[in-house]
Image 1: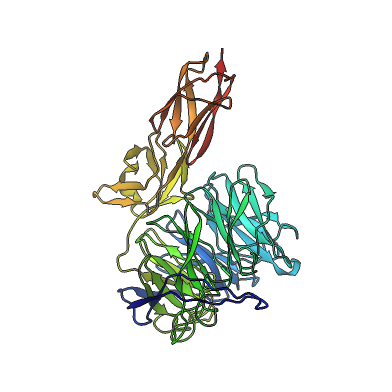
Image 2 (image 1 turned 120 degrees about the vertical axis):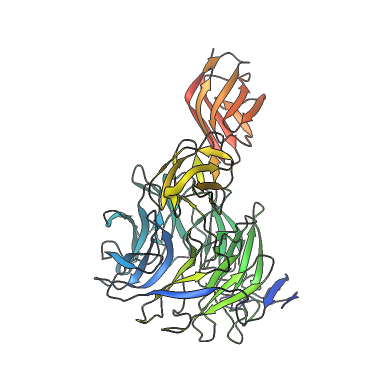
Length: 557
């Protein structure tokens, strides 16, 4: 049973000069046995000969296996890149060295079929950005960070434009961080102009509004951390300063987005009401207003979970799942479920080198959900060899689904890789209710093409058996203009703008002059009248998802 209270809470941070009372409703759930029939299984115990101390998240590849990194062990004791099947068959693929830097941040799969990650070179207080080819198992160092570019924090993420990767770095000895962009097609690195407001807790998270969100473990007005938003151009807006009161402090993990409500969720390692403000909180950021509020206070008494050290998994069942670094019957951390608007449910207490839930101290290792509906995770400690554990946790109702690689932003006619199971039996692919062309790849992936009539919504595949698998999240269709009909004419000419992603169009321009007579016929066709003042130039379309310019020039005669 849970109770609700409205506490008036003093909080301190650093030198203890701040005392602030915050009032809000919070949920207190009693510790005890799981309320649902989850199961836990240790699938592989890491051995330092082939890599140990795994950190970062796992990433599902197009071959159905999971990829990750270790931060130590391997031939050079700099860590490894590994592949593991969902049944626990483990393969060490690459040994990090002094050129790549030590691994451990995890990997990101990009649309070019390669994985991207970052390494850390402690002797030089710097790091690297690298590419890993899963076919050849070759690694290529793309960029070595300078002292002003910071030490990269976690792998880069795929941006709204899938040609770009974005990441963050921390400058040693500084309270500020950095942000960077890597362009895949031109193999170019760019340090973005605005500083990150503190030591960033990478990686970034690309949300459904097209912005990237992140947290910093320090910085902010009270040096208790901050939340920020970044655009593809590198513009940064600070959203919230943590006060080390009931709102939490030191948010040292990336954010995620709820499946049901579209809000952002994260954890603060420290702060909160209990334990003298040192047990941590779960918080919510509402979109689009960017409102902030703590929604759960970790208790930490009597073996209860506290100090969440990893990000949350927003699962396809609509609930959040996470872990804590401390708490549990053996003090080695816990796994939990948080139901939005409902209950905090303790699931498993980690038990170290053996026992019911072998593993320990899951710091920086968030859960991931495979398309088979199972949850998988890592712990950097525990296991039979003491080098960490790869485990699976089965939710009450596993939901098989598909994923769209490697970003939820898609564009007309461009190939989209769909990952899942039993995909050789697919007979149709739909973007929403619109049928799409596709080609089979293997049992675990296929390639589909975004149809002109597609609108934002889930992607689904239908198997020959009649079973339908759907993506847990919705794709967002970027606008694209393919041709103009006609391509010339005087002011007052009605022009058909052909393409895709036009749903919700807010503006059409001719050489920068807004058209006042605009009609969206369907997501692939707009009719607009050439406005007075227009000159020869490109036609532009603006939608809630972005903007597009025609490659073709409209000639005003």
